[in-house]
View (cartoon, rainbow, N blue to C red):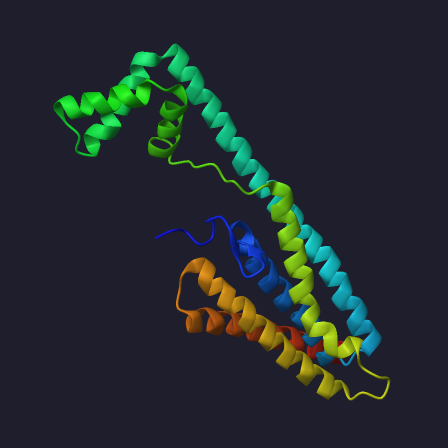
Length: 238
């Protein structure tokens, strides 16, 4: 089955290669922002303070997560290129040893006799094919086609977009709005956002859709409950 996370093309308006970043950035954004809202509500903070804390979380945590993703993706690509350069050097300078390694790889796959020698001859006749084979079969490494910058952008955009959802009821609130109702609306909106992201998560992980949604909602709910009661305890303590 083709890997949905790294297959090319689009799914809805997503580039399939970056669905994973969008999903996990969105989950983190929704849960952490909702946790901020829940904690602020538990501490009975003013609407303006909730909005300030929420946006501070969106910018700071979103940027931090995207930077981490950037360097992680870049490190993987750099590691791949370093190992690839080593394989080219070994083919140039340790040719017989590398030929034997190819022969050993395909012997383990069940190739024997003349067929084995033909396979070895074909692969070692082209340096690029040879190196690519060694990268996949010996080192078990494949080149990640995603770029670090686009990975970081996808993470930040999803974090900010989905993370904004818990704040919507507060952004459009009037001065006379009941804070309890605002928090209820935030819970509903966040649940809808998590359901959407949970469904996308199921596509990425190729798991049951209901299970993916349930796991995402449960994680978001747990974070909110913890944050709410931490806020309430701290308010009473100070």
